[in-house]
Amino acid sequence: MTRVLPWFAASILTLACSSSDPAPSTANTTGGAPAATGGAAPGTGGATGGSKTTGGAATATGGVATGTGGTTGGSGPTGGAPAVTGGAPTSTGGAAPASGAGGMNGGSGGGGAPATAGKGGGGAGAGGAGGAAAGGPSGGGSSDIVCPTGATFCSGFEGTALPAGTKFHAVGPTDAMKYAFDTTNPKFGKQSLSIPEHSGGFYYRALAVPVPGNDFWVRLYVRVSRAFGDDGHDSLFGASNGNIDADVNGEALVEFSEQFNEVLLNTDDQLFNPSGMSTLSANEWHCIEAHYEGGSGNVQIFSDGMEIINAPGYAKATFQTFRIGYMQYHDTRGVWYDDVIVAPARVPCQ
Image 1 (cartoon, rainbow, N blue to C red):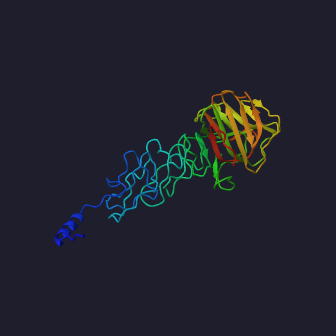
Image 2: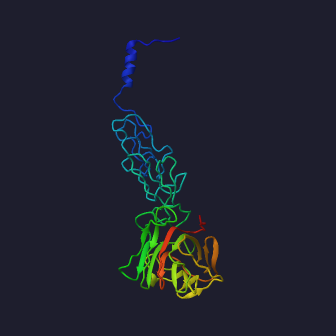
Image 3: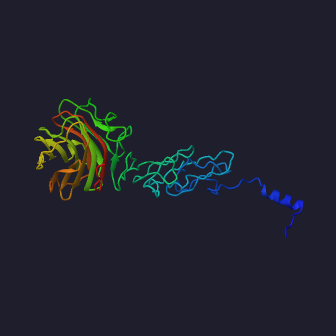
């Protein structure tokens, strides 16, 4: 049986439902303020709705973006202001989302500022419209290539400065160019790290990067302007017992070198000559994998998937850094590097 309310009872109900208090945002009943632990910015740049004047940003802990990238509500007076902190990460760089490790960049919409990249590298969050494609190495900072677990350095040198946590050393002429970012012939991306040609004798130029321990692998791409493997002593890279601040005068470097018309190992003129006569050809990219075991002294070098050096017990040391560059003692040549990774496990060539 249907009951009909008197007109005055319906009016009372109408007044009770039209209170001047706005309806709370569905994203956060406290008005959209971010959580005290540093919620990530929503994937679409902050909530756009909710009738609260401060927005309605989604709450998250440890820098994880919500799955939908922010709640869209009603037509609030301010259009949904972004969270005050802009999605700042926690002090440890933000918790890893399910679809990638490390912190994420925020969404592509206006509003909330993007979170900075966190430790351990990562991939876009589930709701981030503009999430980072790759996260940073565990040593800190962000990266422009995908980093494997535990990597202490990985870079494709796509930025305008060298990666954080590294140091470039130049010992020799003070007026010569140390390095450059070259866009002419990158292996991947838009540019590579260049060590320009220098005529005039000795010039040590090397970028020092951290290593994950005393047993580690390196994967890098290298290109040289003249074949590497001639009669003079020059070196491209090596594992060093020097810390990040040490230059050629404060380290013992297990160098990947040339001499006697082949590539070999040289550590303070203690040589290891492989059985084959290998060289690196000029003007093409080579994928190099190197394995250093400081405790046993074993060193292995692979070029384009083929082992060219196997030196058991050659270099027992306590490694602190790895160096890439050009340690010029005799021959003038230009050298380029791209997509360099230093990690605790082997990283295959692409």
